[in-house]
Length: 220
Length: 258
Image 1 (spheres, chains in turn purple, cyan):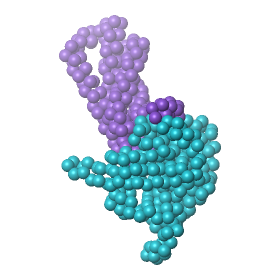
Image 2 (cartoon, each protein chain N blue to C red):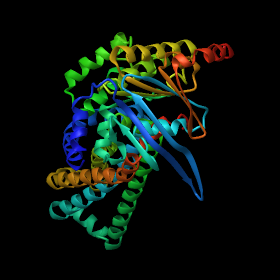
Image 3 (cartoon, each protein chain N blue to C red):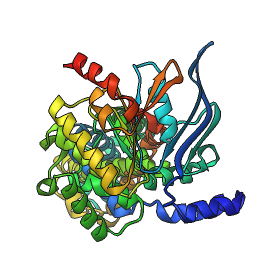
Image 4 (spheres, rainbow over the protein chains, first blue to last red):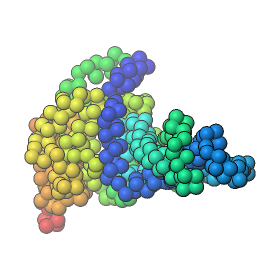
C-alpha cells in the first residue's frame, strides 16, 4: 500500500500542472472581465505609490538644488529651511497611505474570491491544486500592482517636478537628478508590487481552501 | 494487497469490475451542538459502464452521497472505493489527480468558466493533466464536435444557450477520458426538450464510449435511460431497481408528470 501510494504521488506531481503562461492568461482575463472594479483597485495603488514617489522625488530635487542651484533658489530654500518635523510627518503619512492601500487590495480581492466561489470549486473539481488557485489570485493582484505602480511612479514624479518648477523656475528641470529619481522609481515600483502581493495573500489562501463540493451548490 | 491493487490498475478494462464501491458509509454534519446524520450507512456498487441514477427528494442525503462518490467529501465512517482505491487514503495531490483524470463532473448550473471560450473550458482539464496545447486543442475540438458544438468552439459561455452550455460541460467532463462521469441534476436548469437532449447525449456517450455515468436527479425522464436506479431516502438506500423491474411503475409516474 505504501509503495503504491508513493509511486502514485510521484506520477501525480508530474501530471497535474498549470503552465505559468496559461495562468497569466487566465488571471489577465479575469481582470479584464471586471475592468472597472480592477481599475478602482489599481487607482488605490496608483495614488499610494504616486504619493510615495512624489515625496522621494521632492527630496532628491531639493538635494540637487542645494548643491547646484542658483543663488536666488538657494536663498529661497534656506528661507524655507529643511524642517525635521515635517519630514517625520511625511514618513507617517506615506506609511499610512500605503497601509490603506494594502487594506484596499485585500478587500477587493476578498470580494473577488467570494464572487467566484463556484468558479474556484469547479476548477478544483477539474483537478486544480490549491497552489494553482493561489497562483491565479496572486498573479491577478500582481498585474494590478504593476499597472498602478508604473502609473503612480510617473505621476508622482511629474507632479512634484512641475510643482517645484512653479516655485523655483527652471532649476529643478535643469538640475533634475535623473539617476536618483530612477532609483527611487524602482523602489516605489517594488513597494507597489510588494503591497499588491501582500494584500492578495490572505484572500488567495482562503480561496485555495475552499472545498470543491461548493461548486455543486445551486444557490449563492 | 499491493500486488493485487497494481494488477487491478494495470487491467482497468475488466468488464465486471466495480468502479465505485461503498461500505457502511456514514456522514455526520456537526452543527454546533446538533449532529445531523445525513448518511446512515450506505452500501452500494457501481459497475464499469453502467448508467446509474440516484433519485431522492432534497434533504434525502442524495447530494451527500453524490459528493462521497465524487471524492468531493470524505465519510465520517465507512469506506468509499473508486476504481478499488480507498479515497480516504489519498493525499491532496492524489485527490486532484483522481478528480482530473478519473472523474468528469457535470453540474446543474453548468459551471463553465465565464472568461474562457467553449474550447478553452474543455481544454483546461487537459492542460492540468499535462497535455501539450496543440494536442489539447485537437482533442477539445473533437469533443465539442461530438456533443454537436463543432461550429461554436470560440464562443464564450454567455453567448451560448443553456442547453449548449451544458453540452460544453459534457465535453469538458470527458476531457481526460474519465472512467466515471458524475452528473448532479444535469437537466435541473434546462427546459424539458433541452433536458431530454442532454439525457440522450449522456446515454449515447455511455453506450458509445463505455463511460460509467452516475447521475443525481429527480428528473423522471432520467429513469428510462438508466440501467439502475437507487432510491435514497432519509440517509439510506430504500430501493435498488434495475430498469426492467421498473417498467410497471414508470407508466404511472410518466402519466403523473404529464
